Image (cartoon, rainbow, N blue to C red):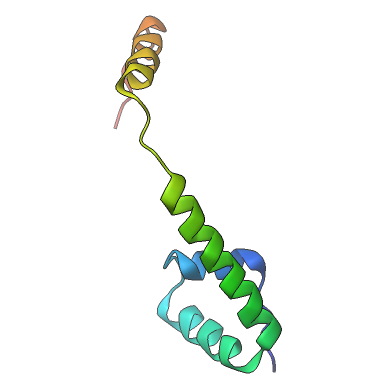
Length: 79
């Protein structure tokens, strides 16, 4: 039986969010399917591009969010 993998499966694989068995199945599928391999390559390139432009938020933005959160005067969360 041939396993079909979705774009979401490949993204989870790239970000190491698949378990060992699923990772093995995806790796095997990549070896045997040139279309899947091409899609995987595109997703890897996209990940590298996105990782290159990701920036941490400015401290001023974080402060505004925290101030807003405090202004809501919500009760503390229970654990």
